[in-house]
Image (tube, rainbow, N blue to C red; front, top):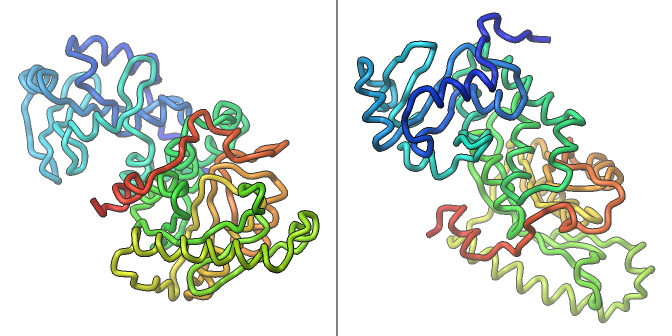
Amino acid sequence: MPSEPQDSSLDWEAMRRAVHSLGVPLDELVLAGSAPLVACGAIEAAGDLDLVALGSAWAMLAARGKVTEGALGDRVVDLPGGIQVFSGWHGEDAGAVTAAARTVDGLHVLDLAPVIAYKRRLDRPKDRVHLAALTRWARSPSCLARARRLADRREAGTLLACTLADAQLGSPIVLALPRGGVPVAAPLARALDSPLGVLVVRKLGVPWNPEYAFGALGEGGATVIDDSVVAAAGLSADQIATVVAEETAERDRRIGLYRPDRAPLDLTGRTAIIVDDGAATGATALAAIAVSRALGAAKVLVAVGVASPETLETLSSTADAAIAAVTASPFHAVGQWYEDFAQTTDDEVRALLGLT
């Protein structure tokens, strides 16, 4: 197992003291580099401290040292104590970095998804060590206990990204199941530096309890029916046909909305990562797996925000692997495991897909 680099000297408290000692507006600073891994507890310490600064904070700090040009056009200034200050982060301006940051102990910290992307891209020995540590942290009971009730879909996606941080996946494509799967998939796609698309699959819900799925249908005519649910609910052939017709129309509407050119997906030889905010019965994900296989995917992984151990086992028997940000037991409904489970809108989906 890789070991932590020996030059690590700045733990979280030391980083906090260093930032406060700079005497600049804290709301104009974002801790980047390895600091977010220290902040979340994935690693104990780091050997240096990278900061992104904007506005007056950048002006004040830039005046304290020699400003040089970074490889991606960012300006950089080295300060004592192993501190490097950047005017942006790997081509992204400081304002955008700040807007996407999270807050830890009153400090802005870069979200983990771009940190993972940065470390996967550089692939230095210490980056590989850090990514392995992040994966262990994401899979650890202490992390899962803190995330047992997810803040929102974005947090679910970030935890999934951490779980796959050191995975060797080649060049995967991340396919969200709209609508709720898209905000989960966005940070995962960013972390893996992978294209983000949608795979439109519609749940077939029992008429008097639509959240209770008796099956699902997807692109290309793939359909999965759970005969045990059909029998338990006492569904007739006419009732099933009515639901299938309604959901087929909605499937086609969403394909037109989220993939305006209606071009069929070509997954030939690709690794497809299917993402949703949760899996209750698993019917929707099973249909998505079948569709992905039919479209030529060489490997299919399923990554969901929350699922029961039994559902993950069912999905793993059909996909190459299935993971959840939170494995929940007892499991009653996906929404109970989120603080914010507001319905994702079409506009939000289109924005995340870059269609607006």
